Amino acid sequence: MIEIMFYLAAVLISCAILIALYRVAKGPSVPDRVIALDMIGINLVSLIAIISLILETTAFLEVMLLLGILAFIGTVAFSKFIEKGVVIERKRN
Image 1 (cartoon, rainbow, N blue to C red):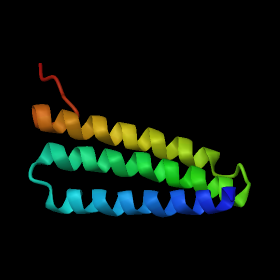
Image 2: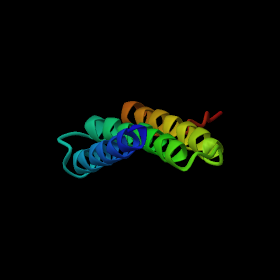
Image 3: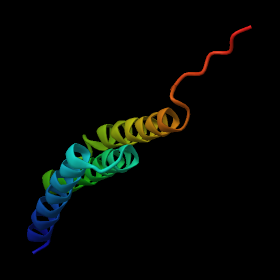
Image 4: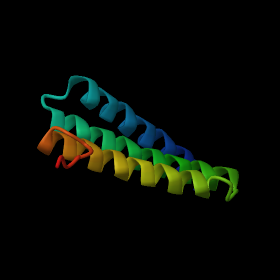
């Protein structure tokens, strides 16, 4: 019974990723697209966790951590770009 729940969760998370991909492609504004990209990152971490539970292995824990960190850094960089127009600020003397 629990394996059926894992497979169902994996299918539902995959559907959520597809919906977020649609929002990235057709989003009405740039902030909506950034939020959709962040949602994809979070859902990918969740999907990898479910796959790790299905396969009964801990081999994907580092992948989940790395993907979470990259999703966070990407969201911060996109937000900074939207706010200021540049990601890396250089002070000119």
